[in-house]
Length: 120
Image 1 (spheres, rainbow, N blue to C red):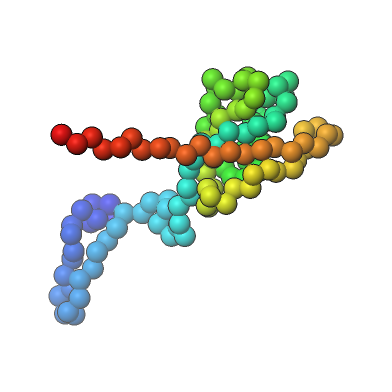
Image 2: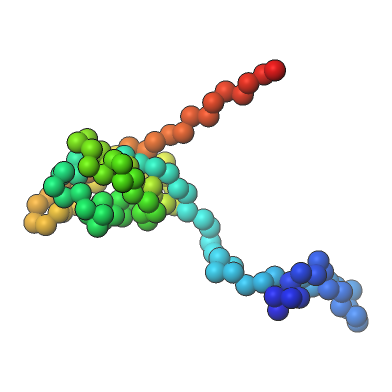
């Protein structure tokens, strides 16, 4: 089938129709695609900032794609790249547990600012 997918269209002999064969991909019947953005997560205790804990906290609002190792042990926040349905609807604060203790985690989306176009 993969070889047949290289043809633009295949004409049917007895019917006035054309057929296009696409090779199968994992996203063939997907409903949509997740949006991705970097978030700053505040209030993760410094002594609890393992990869697993950062992934757990980020996973409260979406799928964690990447954790910025340079910010993992900063005193204020950790940067995490998260994929979710709508990045504008990620809540500002989320409550969860670390061990037997409740915490409120604050999420702040980093908005990329495009540089103005230079005119010649």
